[in-house]
Amino acid sequence: MGIRFNYSNTSFVFLNCHLTSGQKEVNGRISDLKEVYTRSFDGSLKYQDYIMEDHDYKFLFGDLNFRIDMSYEETIE
Image (cartoon, rainbow, N blue to C red; front, side, top):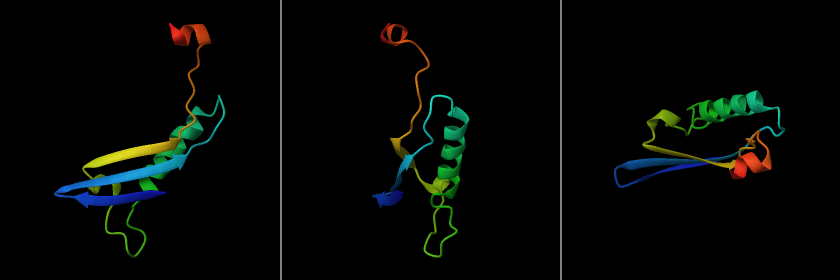
């Protein structure tokens, strides 16, 4: 899901997504990110005149599901 707008002479896009979960699914999450990026505002719909690259600022939010692969102690240190 995404929204885009212009404020003054600056364009913004905000995307919200939920990526593949699981400790060992890093490649799946990266693939999801690529798909979200290329399919959001890709101009394929009649009313879309924008692509992601057209925007000055891009924000990605959501459940990205990336994990820290370290013990609790290592992470705190």
